[in-house]
Image 1 (tube, rainbow, N blue to C red):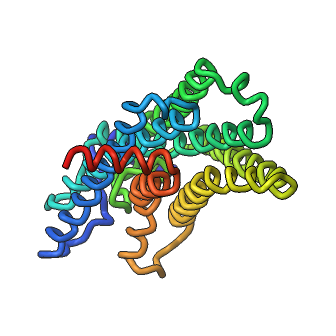
Image 2 (cartoon, rainbow, N blue to C red):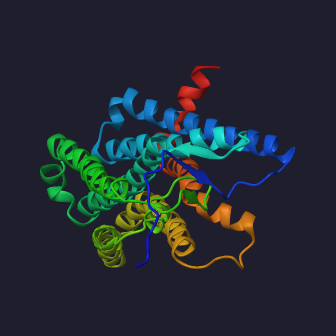
Length: 309
């Protein structure tokens, strides 16, 4: 009879780190600079939206929620990353590892839900302008933002609870940060429940993405047969949303492919870059994208920055 040695580990080892010598200090400074830039850019836009009553419209409230999520997600990754880069032993306690998984996964889910709500808002504004104020009032806006955060937190709480209850045969995660799928792969016994829930969670996320693209197809159809003013309005407000969605979806796709398939033939540094892309690029990409493309935000940012000089 085969005996499987399983136990409950108090820590995990992140094996993707390697001895970079003096380059680890350079890596630390680059990561720290990226984090500071991410925090400053997102905080600036949050302050601009909150301080200006003219921006207290549904679209900008959803943007504010998006920028808060960028701060949340980047902090969940960068803080542990900065500690690990300068550590000689790349271990993390089990509780902190599950906390990071929770932060990273809720960040991703909130991002997609927020983009879905923003696409719905743009659909109403462009395709049903006369009914917009009736459908998208302050109460509806508050409810949608609440659901955008509540659903991911509940869904990921269940996901983490299932993973944390597993008996593991190892504690080595071949990444630079904690990942739920990597933990599940370490399980000694049947993980059918985890796999079924994971598939259901993935399908739900795919449905959200499909809904976003569906709304933009509807918007595009209206623009093709609408006036020049309608097309300009659609392009100015929808282009940043679509660019953000495509960028984040591609980053998530890279991460899913890398987690599920054997990528040993891919250079180690490239694998690390691809695994971090969706968590590091999006929090920087969105503030630049919306800050430069949306005229109201761009003007308010200039006034705030120049006023402080």
